[in-house]
Structures are given as C-alpha cells and as structure tokens.
Length: 425
Ligand code: AMP
Image 1 (cartoon, rainbow, N blue to C red):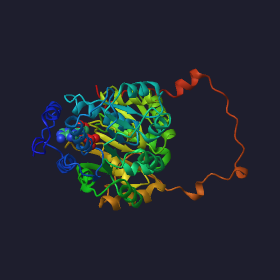
Image 2: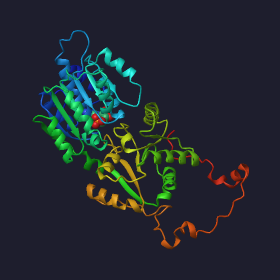
Image 3: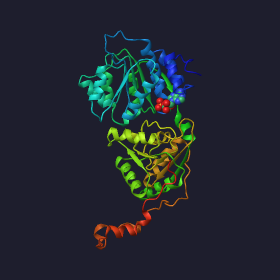
Image 4: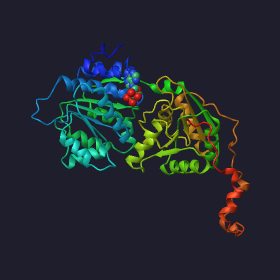
C-alpha cells in the first residue's frame, strides 16, 4: 500500500516522502480514503499510531484543492482541538511538514503563555487552527477568532478531554461551528460519555479502529518491583546505575512527586534529570522536552497529562515510579517506549497500596507482569508492633548537638556524587 494509491496528491506525497513515510500506517490506510470522500469519521486510536497524518493529510488536500474565493485575508477553514499544549504544538508542526508544498498556513493557540504572538498570527490569516479548548474559547470571546468558515473540524483525544474536565468547553466550541462541515473525532477509549459526545458532534460517521494497545503491550518487555514507597527513590537510583538505560521517561502521579524525584537525583547523583508538568512554564516544558529529545538529558520525569503526546523515538525505558490508578494509563505510558518497531522496557514500582492498581492493569493487558524478586529494596510489610507510638506515648526526643558543615561532609563522603555508568554520552 502506498499514499499514492490512497489518492493523496503530489505536493503532499512529496512532503511525506521527504519525511521518509513510505507506507501508510493502518489508521492512515483506513481513514484517508474515507476522509477524502468527505465523510465524518469516528476513530478509535491513540497517539503513536500515525493518527495525526491520518487526519492532517486529507484536510490539507481538501484545502489545497478547494481554494477559497477569499477577499485578501485567509479564513480559518479547519480547526483541530486537542487537550494539551504539547500535542497542539506537535500537530501544528505536522501540518507544516506535510503541507510544506501546498502553501496552506496553520497556527497554534494554547494557554499558559501570552496571547499577543498568537493573536498576531491569527490577524495575519491562517487556513488551519490547532488549539487547546480554554485559550480557543477565550480568543473567540475576545473576538480574535471566528469559526464561521470552518469546513473541517477535528476533536482529538476526546477521552483525555473528558479526564481533564474540558467537555463543557468542547460543547461551547461546537456551538460556534457551522452545521455544514466534515467532522472527525478521535479517542483512544470509548466510555459512554464519549460515545454520547461523538453522537452529538458527528453526522453518520464511518468508524475506524486500530488497537495498538495489545501490540504495544506485547512488544514492550515489562517487569514490576514490589517496593515500599519510602524506598522508591533508592530503587530508582539503583536501576539508573545498573540497567543499560540511555533514555528514560519516569512517570510520577503528581507534579510535586516529579519535582521531588528531580531533586533527589540531583542531590545523590550527577544525573541530569528534568521534570515536565503543568506547573512549569511553557518555556521550561519545551526546553526540558527539547533537551530530552536531542539527548542532552537522559531522564525526563513527567506527569501523565504533561507526557501526553510526547513524541520521542528511542525511549529505552519507561519507569512507572507510581502505578496509575486507571489501567488504560499504564498502556499509554508504556506505549512511549517500543515505538517504531523497536522493543522497549517498562519497569513499574508497586508499593502495598498500589497492589489493586497492578491487578487492574494485569486484567486489562490479559497477563501477569513478571515480578523482579532480586533487588536491594524488597517490599516489607509494615510490622504493626514496630509502628510509631502515638505522639503522647513517644519518648522525649534527645536534643542533637548541631554539627558543622565540615563534620557533616566528612561523615557523608559515601553519598557524594558518583558517576552514572548508564548515561548517554
Ligand atoms: P502520531 O500517532 O500521529 O503521533 O504519529 C506517531 C509517529 O509516527 C510520529 O513520529 C510520526 O512522524 C510517525 N509516522 C506517522 N505516519 C507514518 C508513516 N506512514 N510512516 C512512518 N512514520 C510515520
């Protein structure tokens, strides 16, 4: 199968060839002909399947073949709504790459940054707008964006929108769209709320589904370490030193937890680690991601939302520092490694409280994740007898004599910085 056989036109074929895309991925093979015919589409697929080109190529082709009779300024004729800034940026970049010989212009708007550069780009005129919901609504309300000329709309990662509480915003945005348009709707999972929303948005859609979950889960070598919560930092440090890691994505459940891991690693090792999460400025997130992509840092600590759509090939290891309580999230996470046919390794830390999450994950992937028994920080059940006595029963604390920094350093020589054998040069 080739893109040409799917009906893709030359200027786009040229751009795809320049990107080294020789064969369309399954989602592209299924979606492109449907979309070129102008039909609505309900796609069950997640990031990593080639979903972006599956919708970007037909949209670019329609826009190219149907130039507007515009009176000067370009009007927004295609709108893509996506939940995170990272995804929005990546999608806009994809439109630029696939459309580089078409003359079609795009821009991207997302929150957390000043709006002026975004409104300036909008004023210059664009054909395609990629947006996160909050900033999009904001700019519509301020009169910088009109959606009345939109002929193609894409709702990307609908289930994530639901998780992130955007459904209300989505409904408001949809109300601004003209009724006559081609609608595309993508979601990795189809819970009932999402099915209801898709019915509201789509006419009589064609359905396509690719299930990379199982194949990804099969390709990735997985293991679980039972460890007490307190010992997780030590286990992480141990793995970074002993495993042949060169590019590691570590998942933390919370933003605070992600920062704590970075602090711990910088204190105890010479490993350069960065964190990305919603509390970081957009600039800091982009820099952390850039450094990780080009290998300047080998470790990135991320929360699920911030990691959504991170498009880094060759991640050797995913480490689930915390197990997710939603089993599908586990699949999304481990899908960050083992991409483009490569194999990857996913290691998970599981403390006593996380055992039920592990059970749910194993149920979803349909197999037991092998347990690593031999490691220096095995899980120990809390001994009720050894539990801390209640405050009033505790013996009075002895006052410690303050130590000089010099004395402290001498005593703690053993924990001073060590080199990191697995670090990428
Ligand atoms: P996506 O699911 O759109 O995020 O795409 C995942 C990755 O696959 C991206 O790095 C794309 O550049 C890449 N990709 C998409 N389509 C193809 C293709 N037909 N051949 C090779 N790589 C592709």
